Length: 166
Image 1 (tube, rainbow, N blue to C red):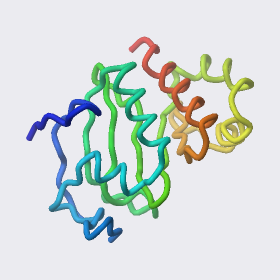
Image 2 (image 1 turned 30 degrees about the horizontal axis):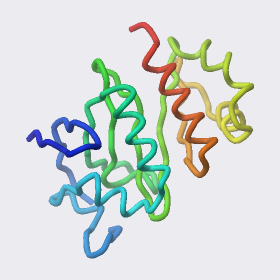
Image 3 (image 1 turned 90 degrees about the vertical axis):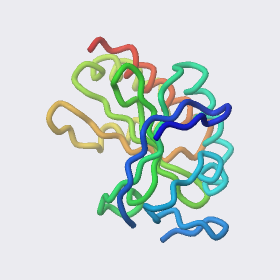
Image 4 (image 1 turned 180 degrees about the horizontal axis):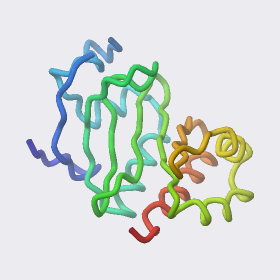
């Protein structure tokens, strides 16, 4: 099912599964009711969410998908928003009450460039990068976006991800 989203982005197909966080009477863990991007933005109540979504949309013109995840890890179960470009996942955003987490995967192709800019990123991101184990030539960075500086770090990592040759 493809829908026109308005000004935030283009949507790709939805994935319906199962899951109880309530947003103004809406259950974010209900796989039968797909939340809108606006509903998710209101749930996060974070201006950084809107800035990140709008910046990604303007800069990369990605496909944006709202998907349901059955992940057993607390905080990652329920609806999430994926940004894809050229068949690659740029990032996945996991909403939570009052904020959100961005998942950015740094793979073998991005590692050298990511490590080159690492000293210029926030201490939080540097510590997170070094604390995240590398598995199968990838680091799955789950970044709590809590400040404009961390948001800029996320955008820099996504730019590297987008620029990496496939």
